[in-house]
Image 1 (cartoon, rainbow, N blue to C red):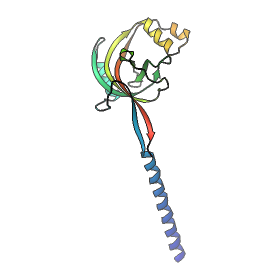
Image 2 (image 1 turned 90 degrees about the vertical axis):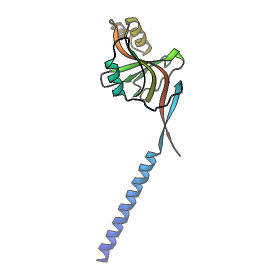
Image 3 (image 1 turned 135 degrees about the vertical axis):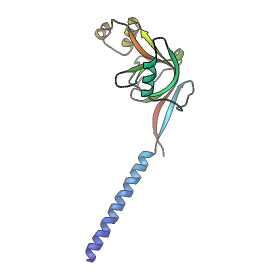
Image 4 (image 1 turned 45 degrees about the horizontal axis):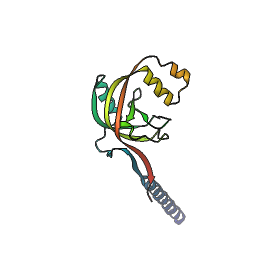
Amino acid sequence: MKRILCLGLLLSVLLTACKVGKKEENKKQEEVKVEYVSFGEKISNDNAIDKEAMTKKFEEMNVGDTIDVKFVSTIDAVCQKKGCWIKVPLNKDKKSFVKFKDYAFFLPMNSAGSKVVLNGKAFKNEVSVEELQHYAKDAGKSEEEIAKITKPKTTYSFLADGVLLESSVNEK
């Protein structure tokens, strides 16, 4: 009987130790602090809407309409010549093409996949064939892919005056 009690006590001590170990592991994961690198005008991430809300705003606009807005998304693609534009998803079907006001700043060419907060002017416009081909060339598309661009395209565009690019940092 004493052996069974000792065994039960030993098991409960081991289980408790495992739970404490898990809590320590979870605590370490929570110590990852999110910081932002700022580009352009100084902005905060306060009051930024999500990409789904931004999609609705774009869908309600007419070609030529412009609104001031701040929203959060993830970078899908970056200009591979100098980082002068990015593409961000709005929903599973739509993306926004983002340029930077007065070409005053660019984003790192390796920032695809990073979370980003964009502040500026959203507008719906029609992009000419020539401009679409230029962007395709900047994106590193082949001559064959560029030649397939034959019609203007209605786009959800964004002119950012300030950008926050997320960067995770482990706290010590």
